Length: 527
Image 1 (tube, rainbow, N blue to C red):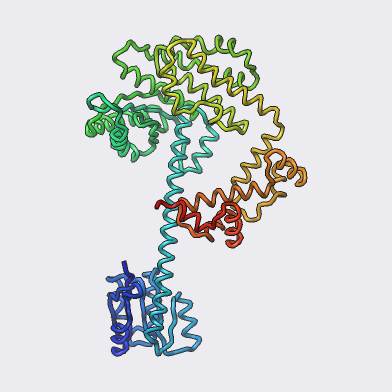
Image 2: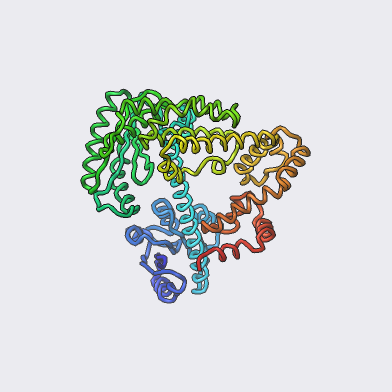
């Protein structure tokens, strides 16, 4: 789409000559209007909204500089080309102060204007690309914030975050978690369809239809726990306030479900006063939803399920992970887990929450030690099939043993490596500060209270790399990500990953990959 150019000139011969002789289209422009002076031009400019204004300085009624001042205030995006028969410093200075893009002295040739228009078109192209890149980055940041918000809320309902940590993280993510009390609603979605293959996309569309009006509710946070389940956290000043909000929300949910052609099973927890008790309200909501939705079997009563479910002794699990040994597992299981097995084998939901409590405790323990949770704890997306296959106490025991004994094995192996925690701290610090072009070995060494020489020796022995080699590897990895996923130019990427000299960045990139940044980007683009 061509850019629009508007021309203001009081001399009709000059105006018509430039209008008719300039190759507007060839330079990427559309001639969108003209006027004999600034006063006549203003209302036309408001209508056509040009990208470029070309104007003479000396004109009757309103001269070019006065026009430029008004245009700069009202339409700051417009690029301005001044045509002047005056080379006095005063005129040029005023033009510079007004942010004029080009200042051409008369007599102006067609070639002069072609060159000026080409420069301006190039500048506008660059600015548009920069704005598009900025919009994309902002969108990515907001998407990341939304994902982090939902993760924090999910951690709240499964009880894996402290109140202080939740409030602090919530503040950074724009969530005000402080309230007098909280209440959780669990919503299970069922499609009114002939039984058959699981239709993921239909569930997704239905879930979105239910979620949209709920996301607009004040003091209500929505979590898309999975494609068949939504969770709402309500906050309020007092329990009676939450109970009133709950009834209105339940009506809204039922109306939306009817409109969407689906069935919903809803469970509500009781109001809780502490952030860390949101988990209990969630458990109550899930249990109530299952009890009301499971009509084909003889479910446990809600009171029995809640009592059994909440008996899991998290402190005992944490203590065993810290101090226990593998040989003690049979006694630990018989004391703390076996009494829950009868309830767990009768109810998938109870079984799920007992195992998930153990998984989350193990995950937190491994994370605190600086380990990779995925290598120790079974993948959460595979847990559903695993849990569904558990039908006996012995199968339950084997699953719990796999999780806990695997965690103990990692703990014991890690204890033999005196430098692992230090290295984790170093890796974390580098990951957070590699964008700093001045990041140095001395700075990182001071973070772990080691002398530079000792730190350099330990780091090389433990990782098989020098500090500089590791830092370069981190930066080049990030450069590859940016080259694949953004349209940022090579010099922009160099600044974002800690290189103040784009030429040196290109040299280092080629040295490590065998390709220039441009060649790498072209290679990774779809053919």
